[in-house]
Image 1: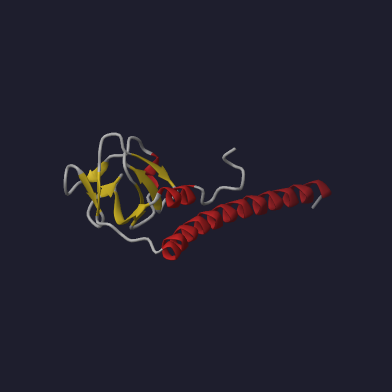
Image 2: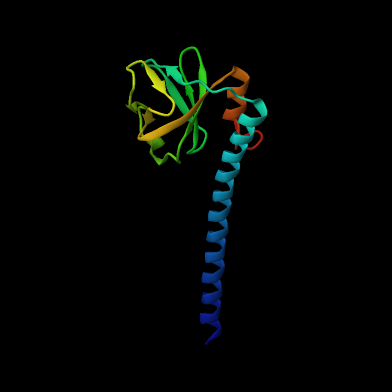
Length: 141
């Protein structure tokens, strides 16, 4: 083996290790966010509700693929899905399965094909804290 081919093999190995480390770091961050939200629910002792009254101007902000903040004109809710919801990137958000035309129900209805496991009503402060999970300090400046 010549020194040049050895150097190329070393470069390929280092590049592969770097890409693997980056992918592992991203997975850990996703898991960290999910765990932080679960810890928040437990520490704040958030109470569940069984439904949300909906309107046409409702919107949402994804926390991760397990959780989102759903905002109506009057309230903000934390929604937890039964499984990771990879379909959240599609707009507009419209419930796929509806038990009722004006409400979204936990355990029955879906958003983008993802079944809603739990719904938690939030205060304004709780919603702001959850919205900032996973952000580095100063990232909203």
